[in-house]
Length: 321
Image 1 (cartoon, rainbow, N blue to C red):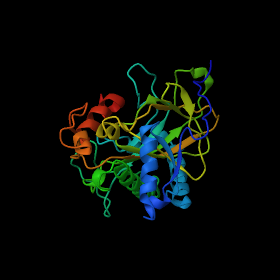
Image 2: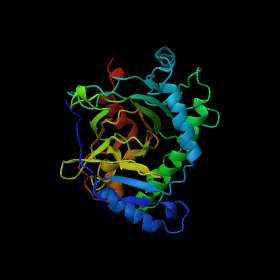
Image 3: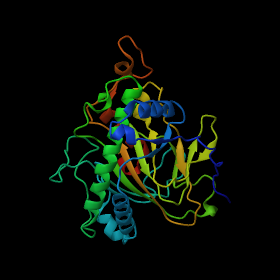
Image 4: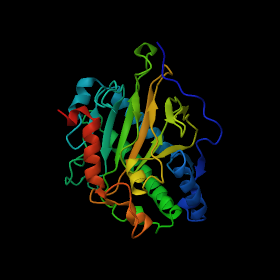
């Protein structure tokens, strides 16, 4: 049996954009135009100049490996809660009803204030589940969340400017976001499992924006505009950013949310650091606010929170139990 394969990516097929001039304000519009063009195409972008210190990334990755290498009985102490916080074991996620369960494990956490408190006002938000057996995990995880969330804010400003909107358009209600971070662990995948087995199966991301920090292992595959699977290999010093379903809906399909999957054929462990950016749950996703009075979008307005409840219910086995 074999792995699901993808062709090597052509140069510039997934654009590389340096966002330094957006972050420091020296030339934000040039970056915004580049982000806009990339989001109308494949919807995946390598980002340089993101500003996350190497020490923060290295610390998060080391903490993640320590957690996933722990005894399963210890990880059970922080098994995923009803508010989608904690450890989601192998087999806990399935991206399509007729697919095999994913091979990945995840540890999920989200926004909390300076006192370590998260609002408990939505089914997908509640207290983070920090493991007592690994006291250093919280500090490393929250440091990464804070930096990655700042990157997401810069990018959302850039998208707004690229659409000729006020730069705070997508951030007007983002002070208590539904954003989540995940450490995602992919074990080495045996070819005997077949071409229909994935670390994570083909899917589009649920929320507004995904910010991914890959390691050097590789395995991410993206479906191009012609329906062909292509590799999205790691590029040192970059993050990989992709438009997710809610941003595609918010822009009435002008920005593309693209299917992707992971096949870890490396024979090595693979670790991803993932931020899923979403604003406050009450945020209305309404494309007519983007394109103006009289515009009739394909989808009715929906709140960010309601949309995510629906999507999570379809994807995660524990929410169906």
